[in-house]
Length: 87
Image (cartoon, rainbow, N blue to C red; front, side, top):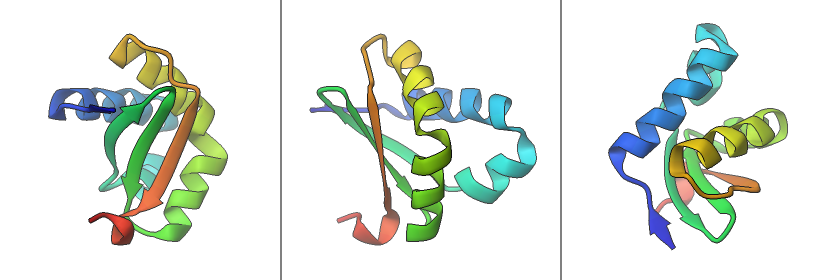
């Protein structure tokens, strides 16, 4: 498992923000944290369960592509969990 640095997290956020636009980013991605990679899985934490589901359903393919470029390793699946599950 690889923990993402703050710079990697913010780089992924910035590229996603540029692609989805300010309104969608503020609505869905505000407060997201891209946390770690385990194999080809990227784990992220969003503000609540509904937002986490919306991000996974609508943006996981794009996030995986962006993360693969930023991290210089293949990311195939993005798992977004609500922050309430963060321990």
